[in-house]
Length: 233
Image 1 (cartoon, one colour):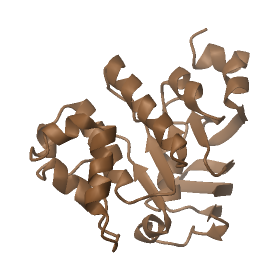
Image 2 (cartoon, rainbow, N blue to C red):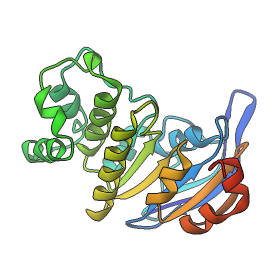
Image 3 (cartoon, rainbow, N blue to C red):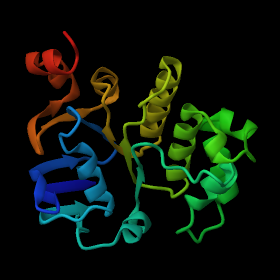
Image 4 (cartoon, rainbow, N blue to C red):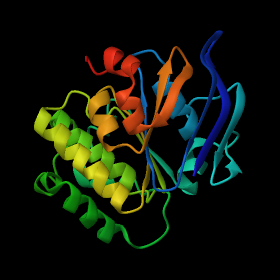
């Protein structure tokens, strides 16, 4: 589904990705773990097209996309839930969701709105509320729902559990599992390494802009370096 080869990216003169290579297979959940500043969010932004790369290639379904603008990548089937949610605060929950489908030209919006409400029943009860009045957990549900309205084949999730109460974290993780069961491919960035590894098929560890470790999620979880650095064991 996604192949990244030797990708580099910089903010001004400061290079923050130093030749990252990874792949995501169809139907997989792949997670990126690492400390703050490791380059995980920059990589996600590079995949979605809002952060330019200076070298390397990004292929989606075998097609090079590194030269495509962000909106074209959405149209091709990539949707991102950004770090910090970034909902449209003055707009209602319903209008936020509809904006997620702005590139679509089919007529299935009501069906997809119903699907989002089935995943997050809480949203239906606050349908007309402005997004800025929602709690952090509600905004995270809305951000995921908005991304799903684009009908992606690849979903990029950047820190979906950040700032959430434990019961909401469990709910978000259960939704991610359900999406995988519906054959959605997911690339997940998550500070909660234990939670991420519990639902992922494979994992990559990033440090200072490079991939330093990769493998099956169970193998990464058992690695003594990961257990000491990220799992507190």
